[in-house]
Image 1 (spheres, one colour):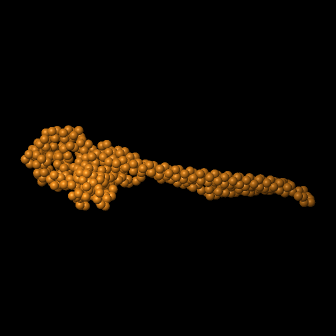
Image 2 (cartoon, one colour):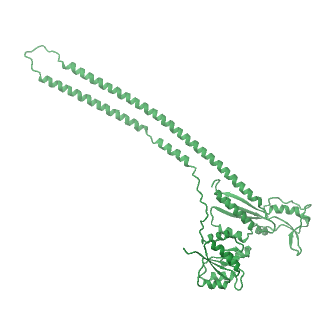
Image 3 (cartoon, one colour):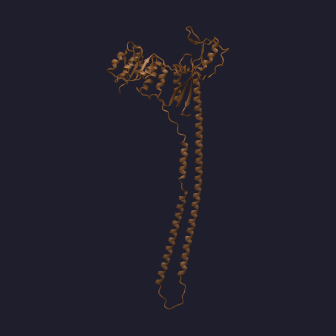
Length: 442
C-alpha cells in the first residue's frame, strides 16, 4: 500500500528537516518546498495528502499561499496545518478563517505530530488504544436463580397423581375381566359334563348335584384372589402417594434452599460492587486532589499553557488505565492583583513592600478577567482539537474570570502591603480539575 504524502513548505531547511523526520517516523512520504511559490508550482503537478505551511517566508507568505490553495478547486480539499512560531487566539482564528485546519508550533513534539495525523485520518487512529473488557452484568446471579426456580416449578405433581390412579384402575379392570372369564369357563364346563351323563333307569328321589359345592368353592377362591389383589393395589397406591408426598417435601426444601442461596449470592455481589464503587470513587477523588495541588499559575501567564498541557496529558493517561469514562472539567480563575506603575507608566505587579492602598489598580474588569481565564496556547488548542471526537473522556473548560475567588479578599486594603494582598491573589489565580465519571465503576 502506498504511503500518504505530506508537503512541507518552509524557507528554513532546518525546520523542514525536523518536521520531515517526524513525518517519516509515522510512515509518511515527505516532499518539501522552500517558498510558497515553489509549493504552488509543485501542486500544479502533484497532490499531497496534507500540507504543513510556514507563515513568515520571503515573497508570498503562508496566509497568502493558503488562500491561493483554497481558491483553486483542484487543491481546495487538501488539509493545511500552519507550522509556525506565531501564537495567540487571533492568529489561530485568522488561520482557520482562511481554511487551515489548525496551527502547530515550531517546537512541536513527535507525539503531537502523531495526534494531528490521527485526527486527519492519515495514520491508524486505533493504534495504541486500550481495549476495556466490560464487567459482567449485575443480573447474572439473579438470572441463575430464576433459571433454577423455573426448572423446579416445571414439575407438575398433579399429572403424576392422575397417571398412578389411571394405572391402578386399568389393572383393577383387567382383574375383574379375568375373574368373569374364569367363572364363565367353569360354568360352561360343568354344563357340558351334565349333558354327557346317561339318564337314570327309573325315577329316583331327587338328590343335590355335586356342582353347587364345587362352584361355590371356585367362586369363593376367585373372590379371595380378587380381594387380595384389591388390597395389594390399595397398599401400592398408598405407598406411591406417601413416596410422592415425601418427594414433594424434599423438592420444596431444595427449592427454598436454592432460592435462599441465590438471594445470598446476589446480596454478596451487591455488597462487593458497592465496596468497589466506593473505592473507585475514593481513588478518583484522590487523583483529583493530587492534580489540584499544582493548580496555580503566575500572573501574566496563560492558564492553559504548555505546563498545563503536560499535566493534562498525564492525568488522561492515568484515567485511561482506570477505564474512566466521563468529563474532565477545567475551571480557570484569575486573581485580582495589586498593580503599581512601571517605568513607562504601564501597570506592573506592585513590589511587596508597597502599601496596598497605594495600588494604582486592583484586579481587572469582569469581561477582561473572563477572557484572560480562557486563554490557551497554540499547542493546548491543537490538543483539544485532536480530542474533539473522543466520546469516552470529554474535556470541558469553564472560565470564571475573577468571579469566584477561593480565598476571600479583605474588604479593606488599609494596613496591608501589596505583597500580602498579592499572596491572596496568587492563590486565587488557578485552574482546578473536577472529574465527573459517567458511573462509579468503568
